[in-house]
Image (spheres, one colour):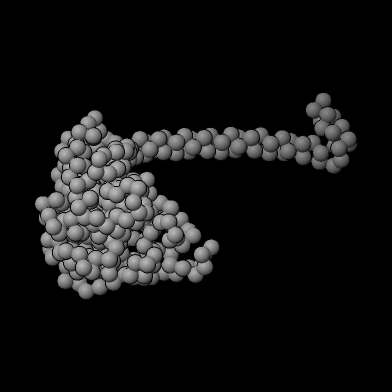
Length: 318
């Protein structure tokens, strides 16, 4: 009787159906709170899981250190922990560049378990084409790298890959041509003016472009280096793609895309997309496995990529 009277009083006070409306509103609020608590817990769990994944991922990212030598300056990027037997990739810097300009590329390659040494064989000098200076610094790195990596897990070097970007690539091509024992393979990224460099006989892989940029003629760069390789060879040529940006209508991928902030006086006013570095690193992994641990073939070097490109191998004509 009391409950009915109370409900009737609520109906009379709040209007027809007010008591029922009050109960429904209360249920909705309670349900809403339960949903919010559930969603909040899910978000918190998802955030915690993401944080753990990020922490785990960051814990195996490439570490790095620098060394100043009489023959030049280097920055060593290595996986932590590193494999006991490492593959070492030595890359000479391009014109007016320094050892600090290739962190994105080096980190992407190191993620595959490789040691990457960015070499400035002519510090303080914008010209980096000197093959003798490249060779001297490469020999100094070969003599000291394992010692530098003490405690990283790497106790020996399985293979030495050498090359470079732009002018550094030209220096590497001539250095390895003059002394084939210097490297087990060549890996260069759009080496500058290789139409008159010496021939190399070790396995070689190059990245280049189907467009002339930064005063680097495309036929004289990676394409020429590819033709100057007498053994197993591969050429990943990035397609010509133009887009509008702060620099106007310009190539999306170009000679200085390999550098973190591009090159002095040569940019397209856009940061290089992260997938570009990932694609280069994936090709390096393909190259090393095909050259040293598997079967050399175009199919072994082929890969899916976000960067639009064509692959040429051995007898293929770019």
